[in-house]
Length: 136
Image 1 (cartoon, rainbow, N blue to C red):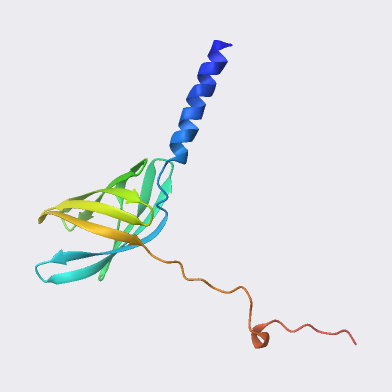
Image 2: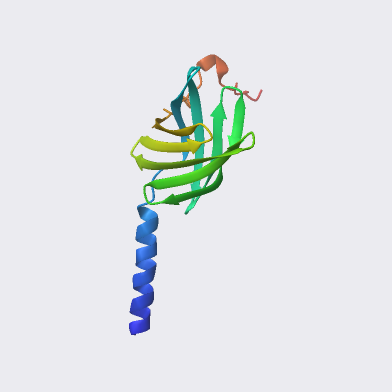
């Protein structure tokens, strides 16, 4: 009896913790300041439980996220740029992520915003609808 109550309590705590995980899936946009000026940077995130995967998009390509973790509203991951490791740690708050980045150039902070999804209409214009054939 007590054993069942303990198991139920543990399972309840695990499900509650999963429920409090940040909603991070999707595309996030930000910019990074460099001595050569600011440039746009994008992040694609996908959380699977406590595991975070995805990529970082630069103007010249993208690189995969490694060792990604999600713990409540906190995220962390690493990337490799040329021969250097870059660490990222951030806090998710709604549609914003405050991200702290540390790499060979030093430390920097950036704010990421969730990209708005493009809405598509499921209704086709009349001239695009498939024609119905009438049996003769």
